[in-house]
Length: 393
Image 1 (spheres, rainbow, N blue to C red):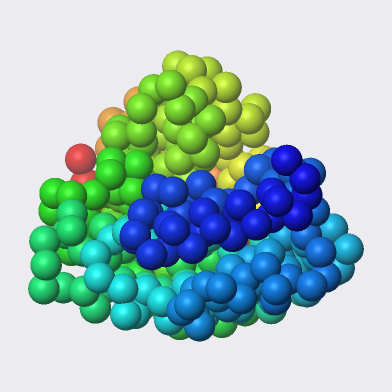
Image 2: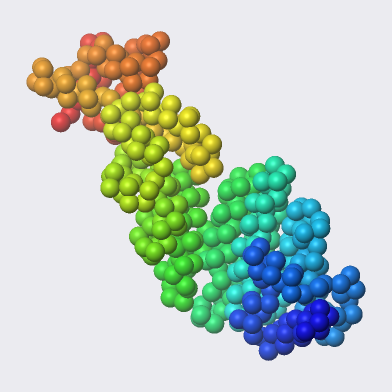
């Protein structure tokens, strides 16, 4: 078939899919991953005079969608990634308008792949230009999509637009973590989808993906227990054959659990071939070695920054590691003195060693102890005048 005939056949198929509201067929025509787009480009020669090919599509919005998509496919190799992203954002805007007036979920398969493409496009722009504005543009489009999807609340989920709520909400949470605005600026609407997770009608993959990104969002917001709950759900429900996905979830689950003093077993780390730094961090955490723990984090700063967990682990583990150091002092003292009363000088020496901060004085050490006790990380009482701490069993 000639190039023009192939393009005509594509436009005819698109028109038929729109006319008969054939969602699966439409999602096969509008593709957004790089490999499939390259194959599409090789099969169809898209000329500059596109108007004549799409002119017989009767619906103005459907005509604009088709024209914008063909321009996007044609220009993606010849214009900058920023321009390509703007075309994709325009396409998302048009699909949102079409979805507003559509009945039922037939557009959702195409919306799903387009939303994923929008996120990947923003990542590409940010990587090549160091400009995070593409994330904000994508977040705005996803937010508009989600508002339309959630508004269809009068019909059962399986036969409504809401069947796409979890996937779009999950992507919105994902992209909101990369915008220059506060996470909640875009994520607020995505949090409304929480109530849908337990309802029937959603693909399991959407539940898992949404829980994963919700867990990561909670982790950034320091809602540690909520983050653990979502990440544990995602990890336990993710099929075992999705090895790399479970490994990605585990990275954040380990961080969340560590902030509650729970460490992964070596067997679990080995099963998912986790990076060696996780073994080192777990060992230092258990030993109460704050300096070495933080040194390992700094040595792997780029990796943990890419995961979004660097500052979280650097700042939020200090008290827990001091607690483990205090426990070692208490254990040594109990064995030697058979008492739970610790001298300040012994605790100070332990804290100086674990932090390698030999300028730490008694007041700073006492404030750490006070924080540990007030947050119920240890049970005990401080006796400032006697310069001792009495730990409960």
